Image 1 (cartoon, helix red, strand yellow):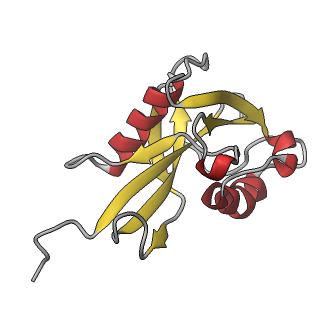
Image 2: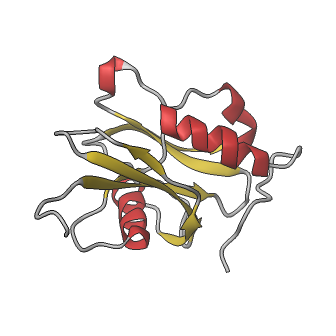
Amino acid sequence: MLPHYSSHTLGVGGVVIHPDQTKVLLIQEKFAPHGVVNWKFPGGLVDQGETLDKASAREVKEETGVDSRFVGIFGLRELPTFRHGQGDLYFPCLMECIGSTDLNMQSSELSRCEWLPFSELRQTKFYSIANQVMTNIILPNVSDEGKWIGPRGV
């Protein structure tokens, strides 16, 4: 029997690779938890009835102004207790930039929004889940020349 209530929140992070294959789109929140400002992927909660692909594209567009297309899911992070006693499922999603790379930052929520070169990522501070994705998925898929060699859109 299924519960009559939500047991988890669903979140997405849009990992958008720049068309020149040398940068990734990252943001910093204006109101950082515990006053610590680190980089993360554009993202947020999935709306009721929304699919992961639509949510990740929507969040990237809302926060950065960049149009993107869902390519796939990099992984899953589960927290058994997150907010209000509910669990949280977070899906980092590979996204392909499908339009202009010009940024239009959502200034009400963000303090920074940038295409960061892969060459600078090893010295960059990330929030926990973004750090795990960066260390275990993104950086191993960057060539010695600083170009993305990982999965691509079809």
